[in-house]
Length: 148
Image (cartoon, rainbow, N blue to C red; front, side, top):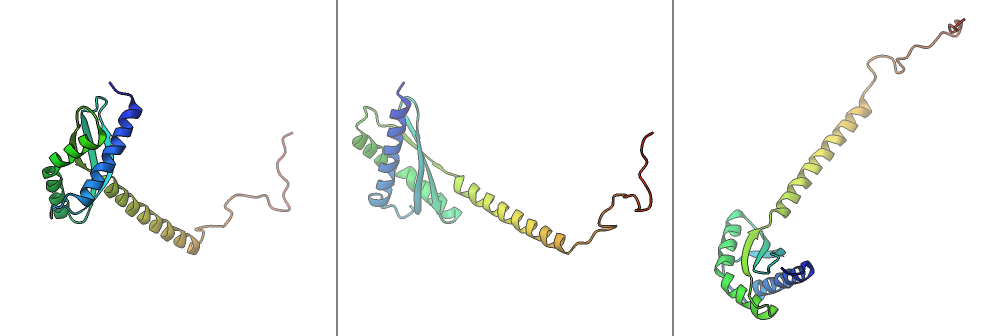
């Protein structure tokens, strides 16, 4: 087992290498606008999971996933060469659903704000169904009952 700090450093380095390779050296036309968002390495440094997002449609996302799978060997050999670890970790690419989830949450929050604004507008125009102060008060001439 390896120190967690070393695994995190290796994950950060793998993220940088993969992002740089995708930007400069991988020339697959199927590869869309890919952003590497995170990388996680197992404790034994044998497997690395690279999380990515793709800007575009579902078809572009599928094409980019196929391009990443086909470039996996080149990326792994470059990671092994640049990191200097004894065994280059196997790379697994996973689409990161976080931006989609964040966009969905933003839409829900905006819808809730719109409903709150509508309720506030209706509350401003609303009037009481009965008296404004529904509590009973003794008349000025009557004295309150005091215990004897």
